[in-house]
Length: 615
Image 1: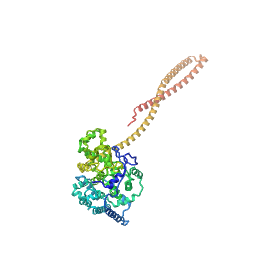
Image 2: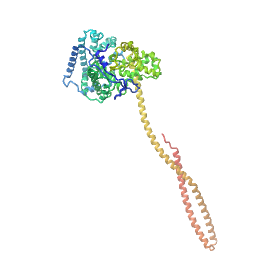
Image 3: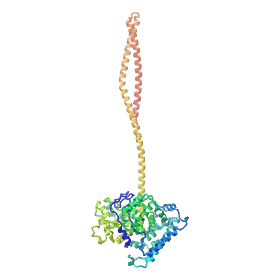
Image 4: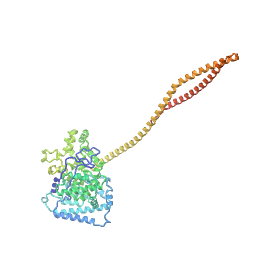
């Protein structure tokens, strides 16, 4: 469907800077290569009309009065009936990261999405169900008011294509029944585009996002301060929002919605990629409704996992993309592997922005129609279709040119024939918030062909469930490996500490060993000298004893014949003998001590040589 005139004018009025922005946030520029661990989000922010319905003035008045009366009826209830803010926040955030129900029995993405949405609704408590039902009744009344006001008008008068009011009335009244009874027709109608007059209403009914409690919470949180305000404002002021009054209003609403979500979900906070999600929502509903739908998309549709620091949701989609591509085109998949091109190098920005960084607003809104009715898995269909449409060219390219083609030229296959010869064909980029000086020419892309071809790509929910189980198994193995690595790091640190202690002990023992060896060497060098001294002393003693015996014999044989000199000599010899005997005794004692010490040191040396220092 053609984009609404006001929305088109607003889109052309808003600017989107081509230069990379240095933003204080968790994400990266959408054109940056994303490695497998990190690249979070992308470019700057803008928005458009709060209530997308381009109805007659009477319809606007009825719609405003209806919404006002509904909100007043909710807020006019007694204070005891309105849950406290703490209760609302805690109950809404209770299952923020809960795993979605298994939908592998569904035959199509649209049925799988409806089954999951219904399961989540049934899992909510009575208070939450009542708030959602009240909100749904409110938007259904708004739909009926629009239908009664413009339903009889001709498409030429409305400036739109013909609207099948009977079918969309069935969808608005009981979407779940339409999915179960006529899913093929629903898929075809959504593929053509939900009419802009009530697009926001259908989105809320399909997602079951209209929640009066959550809107009440938003009205409180929008006035609170957030640590991310500076980063959000910087992103908004870097785009050319302030070209007209409506644009300024929409910029304020977008700021309020994103700031409130950063307060609502502090674990995620603010990332640039949220802008690409919030802009189409703000253009098609009030800011409170936009906040409710944003929370639903984050929580129930799994978008939150795309923006968490671990980005596990992004890695899951990339894994599913690889597996689907492998099954749809093994040749292309193997070619990319051989060339070393990973999906994270070119496809991350597709999933983080829903292609919003590349396509103009009319394409983005059509993609959002598909995402809200079929889930974010429908982006896989769009991505796989682009790969298949370009398969012939991709198989001919090598790494550098292959990566460049995937980033820049992959979308050219759907450029309208009127623009094929344009020199800007390969370099033109679109965003949700295009520059006014460039403008976004309508019908630049063959939108219907793009959507039709994408829906022809068969993706079975059971296969996606199986791929998800594979991914979770791989994550568990990686987590186990990381746990083992961390445990081994701790053990390694402990062993290193023990090694340092042993090395310190070894050093001390080595020093002691060196000292002992030195003492042993000294003793061994002194022993020969001492042995010589002992032998000389023993020889001297023997000589003296021989002399003494000779003199004693002489004395006995001639007691009177000894001269005085001889007597004196005998006394001297006796004294010298006594002295040498004492010296000999001392030397023997010292010799004995040295021998004992030598034996002791030798034993210690042998023991030290047999010591084991590492165990």
